[in-house]
Amino acid sequence: MTDTTLYSALATSILKGQLLVIGPLAVDQAKMVTGITVDSSNTIRITGNEKEVLTNLVKRFERLFGKASIEVCKEAIKESQLSISDKDLPDILK
Amino acid sequence: METIKKEWQAKVATVLLIVLTIWWRVAPSFSPTPEKRFLGDFISIYVIMAIWGMLWGLLIAQKWGGIHSVIGKALLFFSAALGGQIFGQIAYAYYPLILHTPTPYPTIGDIGYFSSIPFSILGTFYLAKASGVAINLRTYKQKIQALFIPFIMLFLGYLLFLQGYKFDWNHPASIILEFVAPLGQATYVSFAILTYLLSKGVLGGIMKNKVIFILFALCFQFLSDYVFLYQASRGTWLAGGINDYMYLFSYFLMTLALLQFKTVFDRLQSKSP
Image 1 (cartoon, rainbow over the protein chains, first blue to last red):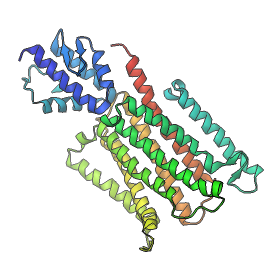
Image 2 (image 1 turned 45 degrees about the vertical axis):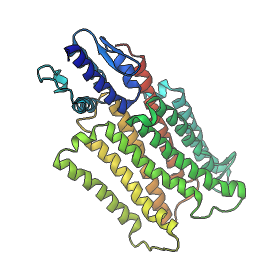
Image 3 (image 1 turned 60 degrees about the horizontal axis):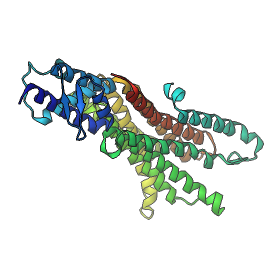
Image 4 (image 1 turned 30 degrees about the horizontal axis):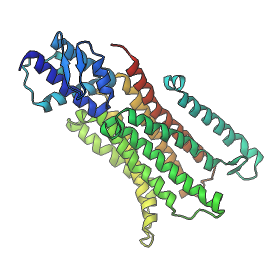
């Protein structure tokens, strides 16, 4: 899996986790992050600095419920079973 | 408050509260009995606040994903709790206003009042879920707290209203209303207090104050319920009295609490990156 594909898959998992909490507003929030495009099946494609874009996506959701939103993102990644090294994971998700 | 400034629906609710407050306070001077007012009966009219809150609550819940999201479900259940109160109020008013007979007890309206208890519990459960309560429940100390608070509230409820209660198994409906309902009310307020305590340090962001306000509205609803039980158990409850006004105010608070979610939704959608 390339870096772009992996980060896009991680972002998609986060979006799906947030959809379960805040509904379609999650898609609107994701679309507001520079470097993210969301297709009709709610799959995310990241362009640019992937790690930074993923961080910005999590920060976007953090604005809503604070740490509780970050925990939802972490949980979504855990459930996706995508493997990413600790070094490549944004600090906000560690 | 931002919601009252921005939402016309909140302005309508506020005007309604002011008009009904004046009516509640001033009208008895012109009437020989406290419950009979000109333009109708206060206790049958103030349900309009709950109707207003429920309608907008249901619409706002759809914006947040309805049954497909945690927040959508929380808003749906709080709206349904208002719906239960509406059903109870209307059913109770039906007998004196339409049939011109005293309302029997228990009656179908009590199903409405009673249903608002599980709806409030479910609403609080989903609100707690969104607020990250599960994260704080990982520690032993907080698990104890989660058991201790409902236990204390149930014990207080029992001590205040149910000590020495005589079970009449010929009337099971009365047992549910008089014995189970106060314990159910103690349960939903325990969940509200727990949500507040266990979300500390986890819940933040722009939703924090909205969640706290909805919990405050629930606590005020609980206070109204317990004042009703207290006055009814001592024979001091009066139709159109302070307790009815407390219910009006609790419907107003819940209406504002639900409308806040519209304010946040609109703000989040309009903000650029």
